[in-house]
Structure formats: C-alpha cells, structure tokens
Length: 120
Image 1 (cartoon, rainbow, N blue to C red):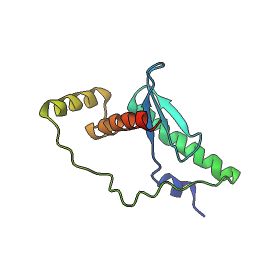
Image 2: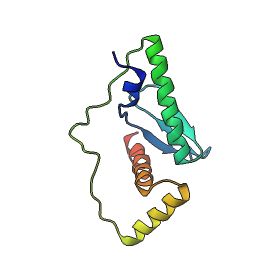
Image 3: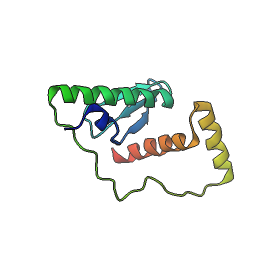
Image 4: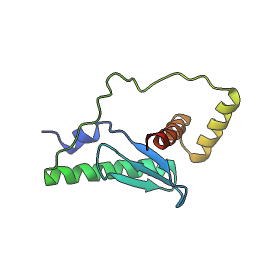
C-alpha cells in the first residue's frame, strides 16, 4: 500500500489556465477529479496546487477512495528542442523575470494555457 509521500512523488498532469475575468491562474489535476486551486501569480498557483494535491490525496487515503494512476507517459521524455527567434527569446525571458519564475516554467505555462484552449 502506498503512503501519502509515495503518491506525492507521482507526477500527475497539471493544467494551468489564466482566469481572465477574476485575474490570476487556475490549476487543476485532470486525473484527480475535483482537485483544483488558484493563485494570483503562476508561482503562487503552482505552490497552491501542491497543497491542493496533498489535501486531495490525504482525503482519498482517509476515506479509502481509489487513487488513479497518471496516464502512462513512459514513451515521452518531457523534453524537446525548439529554435525560436532571438526577439522572442528576449521577450519570454523578460516576461518570466517579471513573473519571478524561470523561463522554462513560463513557457510551460504558456504551452499549457494554449493546449487547454484546444482540448475543450
């Protein structure tokens, strides 16, 4: 039987969507039904998402709810190389600095937000 710490180490898919009406960002874990949170900035939303994931898993363990395993992503490395114009690189770097996160995190946010629009 897995412990809370075991489940916390599992990478569940995180969807990040900008809330244009209320402001801030909404994060959900599609494989953990009802596990959703938000934050004023991407950084705070991601921090809140880890807290929400932990609370969701704790509740599921306490109530004996079956915890789903994440989609099998073994065939995907999570990495790809992308060549972009220098001007775009500069813009992405500046935006990520303003948000106080790495450019990698910022690009993941942008890709996730755009991908979420096409999956609805």
